[in-house]
Structures are given as structure tokens and as C-alpha cells.
Image 1 (cartoon, rainbow, N blue to C red):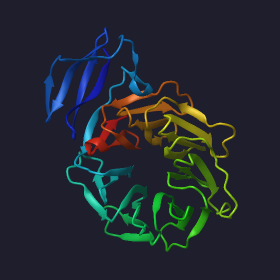
Image 2 (image 1 turned 90 degrees about the vertical axis):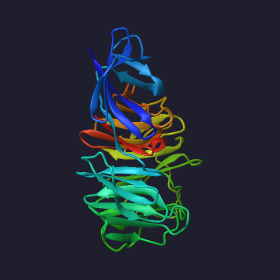
Image 3 (image 1 turned 45 degrees about the vertical axis):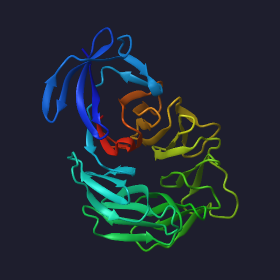
Image 4 (image 1 turned 180 degrees about the vertical axis):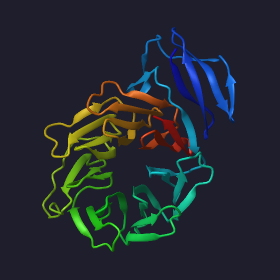
Length: 361
């Protein structure tokens, strides 16, 4: 008999793992649940999921695989105004309020370490080796890009300050790139040294998300522009000539990633997950999935794309090259907005529960 793992939520921030079983008639009953480390057996009927077939289509356009059992557990609670989340080898790093925080993956995290306390964090955070990069000043006009070193964040260095409004950023061993929202520019600085600003593109709509590969930088332009842009990292698109969009007529792309020679993004307003080769978007972008509900938090691992349907409180995944109906990974996650993955786990920002949730792949 297939087993299915489901979360029991006794309060907005208390997430407890449970195991359920499905009868041939499609009824799901509690088989074993865990409360404070004590296992309780029961047979309380919960809900009718379908006709008893192996896969049932559920809300948000996802497919629930009855043969897949995933453990959903609370990792950190009491985390208000949550932003982005990233993973290191041993650490989980996220932004909460105006702090950058860290906890060991061994979790659950009872007391996060505060790496930096800054005024007006944008919520964007990136990790390169053992250095955490983040941007500040989304509204005050005193924007900066900074980094601090793990494990305790004691070494805090400004990549560049006095930037006005700053948005998302991307980092590799060579450069730190960021969106200068106020001046409508994409800017690069050498990583780990005094910034000698290089303008990658100017006079362009910015304010969305940014992603990089070795040759190009990609970014999304929010409404009303609703486009994906691409520029050479060398600065070859920094002239005053208008930069043509890479893909037009998008719908508020709140997530954008580059992986394995392709750029993938999630359109929150029309529920589509789309992709194009990084070499060029000839014709229309290819739909990976449609009919999603305010998708965001997109991450990829080479084969799978994972995202949060913040409109239906679900986490789903689908094969990038052969997606039919997305597979349901978890549901009843209160307002999921950001994801991070490693080889074994999916970490989810649950803004509605002020929590970080961990799901076994």
C-alpha cells in the first residue's frame, strides 16, 4: 500500500511530520504522526483525494504521486519579513527583517546566528564559497552591496556604497553584478576587491531578478515592461543605443535562473514557467508548465525545475525537458515565496507562517 507523507499544522509556525496511507478507494487515513518525538497511531479519516489511481490531479495544476512519501518539517520559526534563502555546504542563510541569518543544516534551527544587521535590506542574498553577499537600501536612496564571511559574519565589507536604490545581485568568482534600479543600469564590480564600476547595460528597465553565466547577464523587467533582457558581461551593450529585449510579452517574472545553457523564468501573473537557450530566444519561449498559481521561488538542478505556487500554497516540480503535469511535492505551505535546494532537501520560505520549512526530496 503506497505511503504518502503530509504535514500537520497545529499552529501557523508549528509544522509536524506525519505519514498517511491511501486505501484502494482513494480515502487517506492517518497511519502514524509525530508529536514532540512521540509516535501516535490512529485511523482518523482526513479527506477524499480521488478515485484511488496512482496519480491524482490536484489544485494548482500539479499531479500528486501517491507512491512518493516526503517528510515535511519545520526548520526555523519566528522569522518575520522573510526574503531570499541560499544554501552552503553546511549552512542555510536567509534574510529576515533587516538581518542576514544563518543556521546549520543539521537543524532544526532554534537560535539563528545573525551575520549582519543592516538598514533596509532588499531581501536579496547570494553565497559564494564562504562569503555572503547582499544588497541594502531599497527605498532610502542609501543603497549598497556588501558581503560578510561565514561562520559568524564578523568581516563585513562594502562592495560599493552610495548607490541609491539597488535591487537583485548575482555573484561568481570574477564579478559581482547588480541592478541599479534608480539609474536604470546593470553594473559589475570585481569580486573581493575595491569596486571599479563597469557598466554592463544602461538606460534599460531593471528592478526584477538577475542571473549570470560566463558570457551573458540576464534580468527581468517587471510591469509595465514585462520583458527578459540579456547583455554581454564584457560591457558590449553599455552604449546609449536601445537594448532590444531577449523575450517580450512576459507576465511579471518574479524568478529567473540560468542553468545548463538555458534561461528559465516564472511568470507570476499568467502562471507560466518558460525557457529559452541562452544563445538566443528564437521565436516564442518554450512553456515548461502553464496554469500555475502565482509561481515564484524557481530553482533548478539540471533535470528538475522546482517552484512555489504562492497562490495555492503548494510546492511542485517538473522535468525541464519533458514536463507534462507538474508533480506535487508539498501542499498547505502558508504563502511560499522562495526556495533553495541541495542534493537531499528543499528549503522553503513560508512567509505566511514566518518560517523556514524543509522537505525531503
